[in-house]
Length: 178
Figure (tube, rainbow, N blue to C red):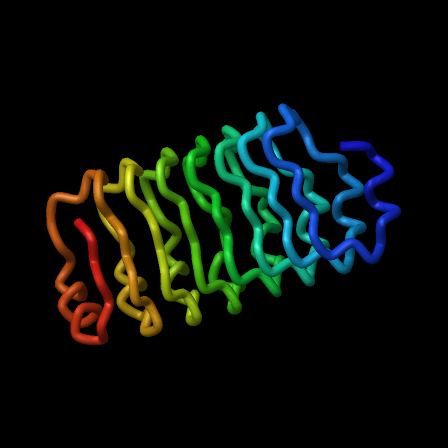
């Protein structure tokens, strides 16, 4: 991707999948109008810090890249509704994930996450959370506060015991896959 990408100030959709790309230019943060960014099945290991400037971004697809971490400022993507981050090498989520108040879908399947941040329960609009195939052994109690959650996928994790609050999630209509 050329570094001049930042000059496309009115760009709303960017699809850059299967390009064998290894990095994103820092100027990607200048795409102020960007609403959809699909950059899947490349070889991107790290996101530029400027990604937090994409305030209008609603859907982010970064699966299949080998990402090892998300920037500490990831939670500043205030308009983000859907984040597809499966099939990477993420070991943890950045702090302040609960600031993503618009987030509805979070797909983290097939990463290396062994612990979720306690504030994940603050994702008040989250209705789909896919955590399957991560080495999770326990879940934060704050997840009982995910009152809009309708699907929680925990297959192929290392959970050995259901938390008591699963009963409440099921009572509100949440499908839990174990």
